[in-house]
Image 1 (cartoon, rainbow, N blue to C red):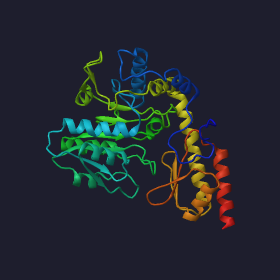
Image 2: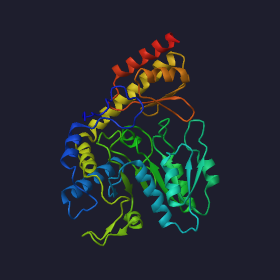
Image 3: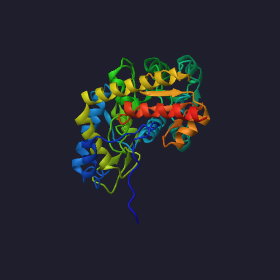
Length: 354
């Protein structure tokens, strides 16, 4: 059988994952056979996980973080809902979130048998606290805000959502799976240091440049992990708060290595290049007459005709659409100005061909 190789990132403009940093790749290879789900047996990778969690805490304004390296944002978001459900004093707990919330919350609601109430966003595609307040009730266990939405890169008003959660006696979760490694270099209020956040998702395997899978689940208090823990009678460790049992030592080691190598200066440089690229391609598309959503973070949405979108994919560009059908470009660290220039030239060529 001919050995297959990985797909090149050269024309990938829609993914929120990117090439791992070389140090992260090397660490992942060294720890392929380790399992942080059994921390007393695999003590070295368990220590690396503590380092990774501490680094993620520093990044998100939490001096004493509790959490672990998850498989990704879906698992971390599910764990936030699960902890809120387990801690809620309600017969039928619900979750209130903006309609821009990631689809992983639909999975979490179904798996955990919790009602998910989604609320329309405002004109700037951000959570609307007044509208969300109308859906919050006595059985609301969790209020969700997004710091870097997957379709438009918007950052919800997290302090206002924290006030709503506090007034309702609910918990607040922030999904910063993608935005978390860019937002430290902006003036947005989004993390534990800016508001009373209970749990937060932040993924090293996205803008953090770790190998897949390496997500992040953080909590401000140990009681959150206690609410998730189950007994583990055949392991030396007596309980386990993670969703999965066996986990990726490669992801854990990779996350720790990426954080050590890149935080903070490397991530600042990556964000600044990506944001400049996003603004450049947004201007380039606007100059060509397309309606473009301004890039708050390094993500651009533009209203291209379906026929043009299809023609570009036929030329090998890996693209995606928003729910409204707009072209969605994510300027990850592997996306260069030269790549975007080639993309725009293909936009011109496809329009001329039609």
